[in-house]
Length: 287
Image (cartoon, rainbow, N blue to C red; front, side):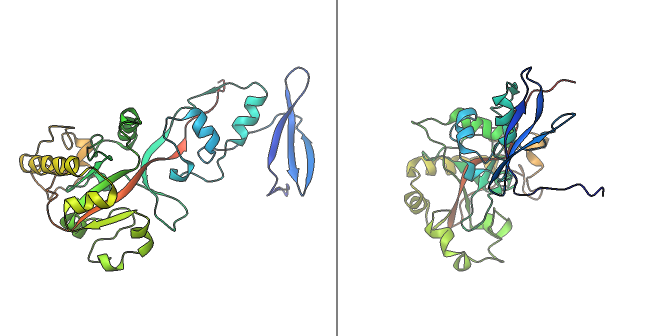
């Protein structure tokens, strides 16, 4: 409105400071030239986090971490945070993010958040040992913190797989998968199958073999899930016991809207990673 110039493609390289440490401007790169822009009253850092900066993720965030799993803004590379730290700024909450498991669909620029699907009845999420990680219906932040706590070199939780059956597939969406009525198996993109993002099998043993999940562990987990579906009580993780859990359940399914049998062939596994939609950490400010 005021006719002020807006410079695009002009990344900030650093903050400028005088001998007393007062910030006096910024150094930028524009059109192949390095420019210094002075500020009389101050510099406003209006930038995001560092979810797209793999080096910063590895420095600050829990392992395992990968910028490719993040559904956050791909231009959030922590430039302003690093520039401020270079002149002595303090930071806080650098180990935090808006944690959320994600589906990295082949051919899509950003992962999809995996929130509702894993709470719906007739599914569970397992690690490579075929064991569940936590209560799939709890809030997405708590679920992923549990995943980080459980993950180790001996018991890797990455990737994880959301496992479900034909009944679930007829009834619900799962990531990019529409229901089987709208997207039959024969129309699922070949790239999704070839990459291991989606696995389809006639038996649980075959599903385990194709994904690399331990077969005995997976069969034991599904057997327990089927028992829990009948009684309405998840004795391992109490899935569906709270009102929060049931928010993304299916009220038509009783006695527990978050639990249903996983027993009807074919069986499916959808690969899932511990992603996020933005980091928490940044500069400490005063009132």
